[in-house]
Length: 259
Ligand code: HXC
Image (cartoon, rainbow, N blue to C red; front, side):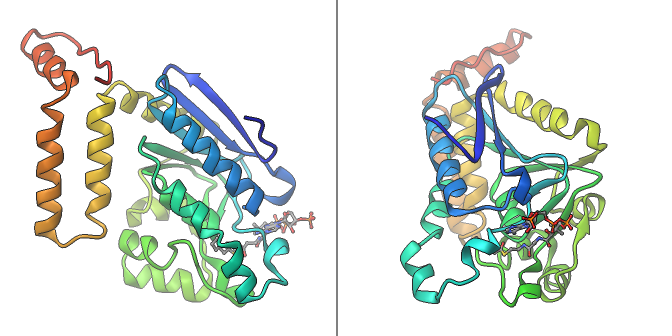
């Protein structure tokens, strides 16, 4: 598949794919074309048996500075409704394989929301996370009032959403929004290292575990626990579970095949 707004490397490292947002002249603003390509690429990688984990990144200056303001500036509510850009976001969120965001520079508005749609975030010391939609007369629309609030709590989320204040990588880590903050020279390498670690695990278990963690966001505890239990039982139908436990007993490294 040919892409114009993103670059996709299926085998960036063994079992690890890399997607780079690629609109450097517009701070990787997420226009509709880019989002459609991203959805298609994630679907393709989800189907690729040689890929276990996906790293999503931008460039050093910007992960993404939000939805494309120029593209939506003159839209009416009904235009927005008809375009239904969130159908694309809904597909992205269904990706079964773990996605790790490698964030440097600006992750604003839809860019911050896109990073929060990923499963883990590794950021550079120069990263700036924010939901500045209020400063242009609108508000977050792809999870900024929901995922951010769940991650950092009401006080910080309200401040970011109501004043447009950015937070640094360090603050984001301290607030629990991201996993790790590292020097800018190594943020991509660190994200890839994290992806390689996950890629060593059973992909069956990783898929079921990701699904279970995400379930915690939209179920009451008892229902979430029941869901978790079923997925836990399901891992016992896999060859990988047999291999993992046998390898432990035999004191060797497991070789997970994804069966
Ligand atoms: C379109 C954008 C853009 C955006 C930057 N650019 N952000 N174009 N949409 N979101 C373009 C600029 O117009 C400019 O193009 C070029 O990228 C470089 O940006 P500058 O502003 O010149 O750079 P700088 O002074 O370094 O400032 C960087 C910045 C600023 C702080 C990131 O660009 C900024 O505030 N951007 C907007 C952030 C924002 O409000 N995001 C929320 C969007 S709404 P030219 O052609 O002039 O060189 C949103 C809603 C999501 O995300 C809803 C769900 C999808």
